Length: 440
Ligand SMILES: Cc1cc2nc3c(=O)[nH]c(=O)nc-3n(C[C@H](O)[C@H](O)[C@H](O)COP(=O)(O)O)c2cc1C
Image (cartoon, rainbow, N blue to C red):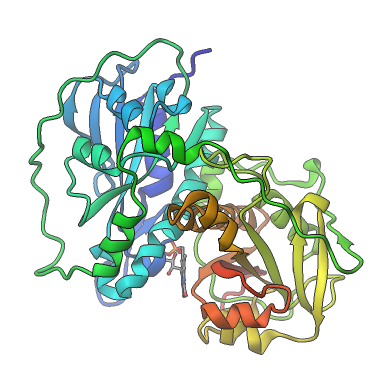
């Protein structure tokens, strides 16, 4: 089977995942660029590169995607896919891919504001970007698989990035072609000029140390790392469950994904008194956490994190906290009562969490994940939760609701959902509900 993307498809994927969709102006005269996916602090530290063989209308090469002018610039000429195959330990989706997207993070672009915390923002923001990318690929009927098992040094050398200031953080295999790939040309150093991003840069050693300590040294190591995917034993419910009641396919709006992505924004004003319909809430929860195609995960192996809810205002659902049982398509009630004040406190004092209909916390038991995947498992657990939340964000807009990813007080969130959540770690939170034009 051959599915080969062309230049238009690549352009659509880049634009709708990491591109600039429109510009506007701030009261101060500053130009605001609206990106396709949400990102912490709107700091956009991710870059996309394309590594491809000869495509119908694009020559084989290594390209950088410039979001500022929506263009590909060729960094290397020739087919370098064998270098990717080598660096991933012959990951099958890469070996068969006519084109591969590589995402990098330039850590400083987020760390100047968030310091060492920027490291997990890499995988949060990568998740929101990939949720767009995977949805667009699916709408183009283009096979797409996220690859987290690769040797950083080999990929960074190919892209001409240093691995400390900017490093590859994931690959996405695009399309399928069974034709064998040719041996790759040599990879001489690249010296592409880049514009300075600030007058000076500070290295946050926690970021470089964590990244290096969770890197893989070779393709062989990558192959061993991804083999034997974790099978998560999903916890048994302790009380009677409330079955989800998702919308039937006929009731789901069929807006094209491009329109949904263009409509998506981070919603901070919610209509406090307008309940979210239970059917919409059920649809968002059920549809957003289906298995994601990541090389090291078994799509049927169960999600790495569990979803804990604060329900502030959902039609037919008592106010309180719940945990989702995705396999049983049901919610388990944990505690009843009005938790709006606690929701705002947990979301670092941000009132939108109190005003929105639902807060969804993704919490993971990291022990089995780290045991199986080493400390690279932290990257995967963050990323999977962020992709689920990114899908939920898009789905909320498809159903005419608003949503926003948020920051939270890690340990307090665990205490709040305990004893059920005891021992787990905070991965991500997203809130959603009916939008309002004005602050509540
Ligand atoms: C992981 C994540 C965490 C975020 N945390 C907050 C937050 O704590 N408070 C907030 O107001 N916005 C938060 N945002 C929203 C971003 O500020 C927003 O995505 C960015 O400004 C771009 O705007 P847009 O999403 O409307 O395109 C978060 C977004 C993401 C993806």
